[in-house]
Image (tube, rainbow, N blue to C red; front, side, top):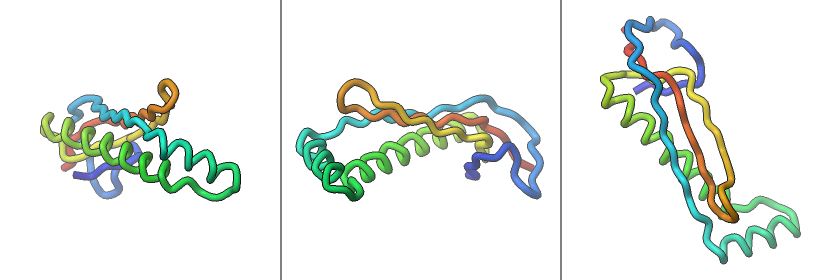
Length: 104
């Protein structure tokens, strides 16, 4: 399946629009990971724990988006937009949305 942020795929023609699809993931952060991430932020550097959590959430949202598009009979999702939100004190939400299409 082709997944792209663009509204078209070079060399391909959209033959059918199947609808908007969304994938979401909400991940909770561990208390100890939060603590060590704060230390990393104070002394400088990157927070590997949060980067890993963010990657997991993004992968989950994209996988869900693809599954929903496949269920609609699509072979591509165009115009994908990724949104990131912090929910509450330590929850991370990643939302991926796009248009499921058939390319021919």
